[in-house]
Image (cartoon, rainbow, N blue to C red; front, side, top):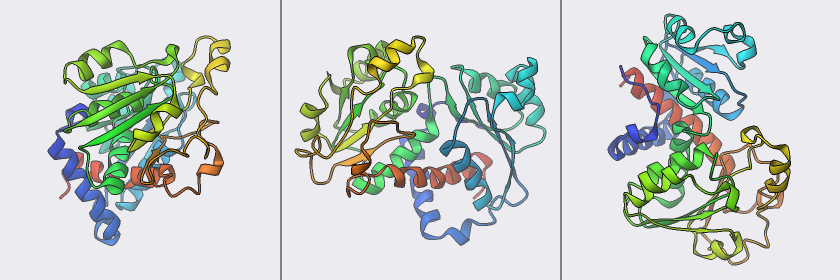
Length: 304
């Protein structure tokens, strides 16, 4: 039995396989519509979510399976003090696979040690979000046709942004990828990401505060919101939340084939005027999330 807690647990060959299956699902949906008949997915979401939870549920329904679970810890026995380990041990008797989101880093890893079925980490605090990264990778692959020889700009909250941390971990394994890390001083990429991934892998990267200066060289621009829920101090959040706002003026010098991604939800960091720009990929990205989660469910359940 295999779980997915961290994107680095997947080899590049396995990522390529998931992308191939996802593209086949897009091309031939009927072929997959009964693949999980009789199977159940449990969604244990201790933290609010729209896209991730609903895309997991849509993925399982479109594979012919069923879904159970909760959308808030308030609606579970966690509100009575039940441990993650106990909840997962119980729920894994009711379901064939579990998708779990939790505000504490490491909670899905603990869950995987007590579960009778595969666990998928659907986001743990500021740590990891592997299925969002898979959605990002499918989007990049469908837009660019490759993962190597790309300059990737990551903008906004790079300190707490688990999607950023996971994407760096995944993309750094491909050849000639350069990262441009765009953030205010207070939200710079954590030291352990630089040390364990970028420096250790001898990956080319630069840190800058200026989005305008970075834009012309980028193939991918990955925008993120400043996350209110990760701040201990409301004043710091208010001071930093509108540091970067992407509008058509800031795209004036961008490449014609730039791809703009965002894990969503957005607040102010991408102007709605960008939504109709052909370079905007963030709504396609959410749809790609459903397809790649379908492929992942099939893989972890061992369904051919």
